[in-house]
Length: 396
Image 1: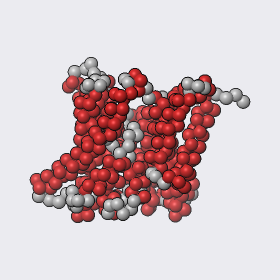
Image 2: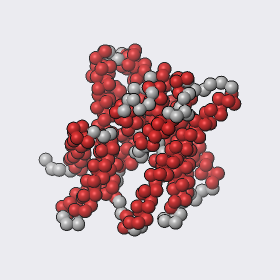
Image 3: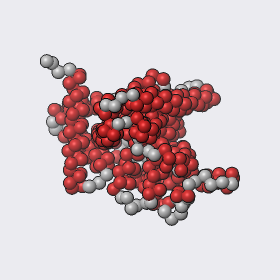
Image 4: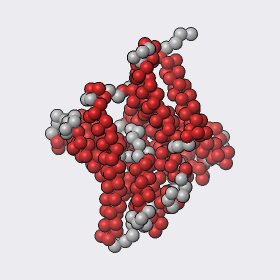
């Protein structure tokens, strides 16, 4: 039996999984940091080592080129395949009752915070690059949509490792906000991408195209997620076979991704809505006891495995680095400057979003925040902001 493209893809997947398992085992026993951080840093080191060794070994150079071929499809792999499963796995853990009590804070941070952070990052990056490598303002805003969302998986990892860092109520809405701003960030990304690629059209036409993208992504994505999630819920209710019940949820996410790609809808919004429905109503009224137990175990496995592969591939993207094009000096200036820009933008977006929430409370004469989160702007706020800074990770 000959080796073809299918064999190469399978081999690549097994190498990636083997690498993530090895890194996680070493981290578990010796390093003891957030698995996503260790995985990404290890991949950066591996990528750098391969780039250095390719000059002395032709076989390594060939392997490096094969790896580049795989990573060329990395954005599509993340956006169209992996992200839906990751967000569904996070959404099934959300309690709608508790989410309802902190909804105003979550909405304020997920919508306003992500939008403002995109604006700050894009503007400051554009100002930074004017004297190094001038880029259009639209491109810098597109970059802002990539780095502004926080990673819900990394947030969960930090919160679990440091349970005493912030109060339980604050932990919950910080985690929920990280989940929803991920979906908002993807919608902003596609909107800005549409605005950028239609650069020759009049501004009014470009803005209208962006509005259409937002409406299609959001409305169709939410409706599709709720409808398909409800159908899956009815199917789960109709059977009493644990394996089949879990299989229905896995197929649900896969078919949602296919349908969203075909209809131009938001995969994150669709899978989050479906996950909220299945995680709250499906588990309580649809699953058998054995199915509910296996459901959490299977989705935790999917979540942690895909997340490890994702951060491994993010780190391996370092093999595309070509600092000699601009010069090492300019390259390191940009790299080091982006970090404080991202941190400052995140801090300002959180502060302004919560300030607007307070202003809205005064305007309407009613409390929009739950009592358990009204202390967020007090001294404890600095801890929460620091958490958001630490867990910020680009993964689009």
